[in-house]
Image (cartoon, rainbow, N blue to C red; front, side, top):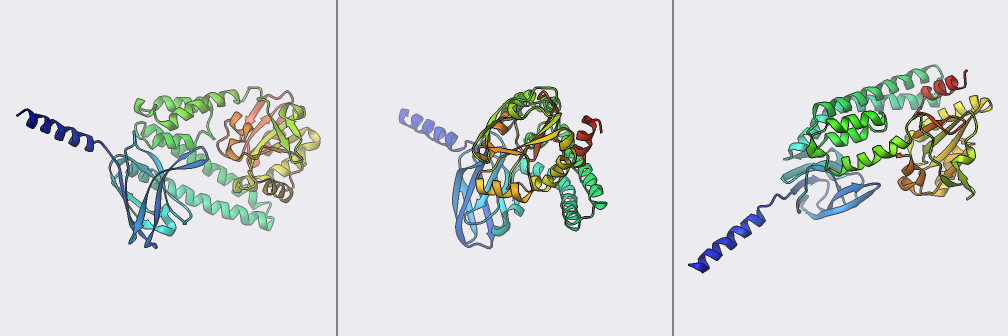
Length: 366
């Protein structure tokens, strides 16, 4: 009888252990018969492999461990470009798509993924308009259409504001969704640190322990140190010749734009002609620029400087997103910039396109 009792207890224990919440990701992919698929998590600028599975006959199954909460993960096929972003949680998920366009795959079985799909469905029309405007702006630049270009840029700036409003409305209306922290994080580039804090306070307490919100709180403290009205923190990086240059060495003109960019960043390269135009117009009146590159390859960096006619001082430590100055200034998206007065006080941030010229002209009394 005693042996039977212990046997029952053992069976109950085994069942309870094996019934812990776990995730399963099953997939059926066109365009591939055999290969390997990887489940990854993104931290900073790196993808960390979490799990993997073999593809056999176009199908795969990842029987992994468990996650503490629904979060964004990445799925990619070995040897293929691109990846699928989806929300993984402790349930069975089904992925259906093509190996060559995995980003378009359909994911079913996750409540949080359904929320993410709903969010993207509302965002897609705005992104499609952005692509159209991007192409029209590029054509106007190539054709030298100086009349149409400002109109298109102004329209695109209004679209960016519309996208920001859509995202913030989503956070307000979905404060308990695990999608909300990711949406909020995408907008911390365009809203003030006070607004970021207010949105964090709106979130359900269960979200405050997520990695993305913990990191965001840390970023908030950094952003407070580089907010408008603060003195710009000093930093030292090498110029193109390998000579150390400190921010304090170049502060002094009426206005100094600290411009974070990179050769690999298409939006940065598109903005560079605008910065060049403002520099050419106002340099003799007290405007200067310090370029801070987030490049990794020096040759690419130097080539972009020459191609884009960036004649001002350029510095970099060639450490990509781990760039020391970018870390100090909480820069997580580029192009990004900070406009300083003659004493090194931050008086504007992230002014681009026509807004950059208007701000510089206004500050210089033009």
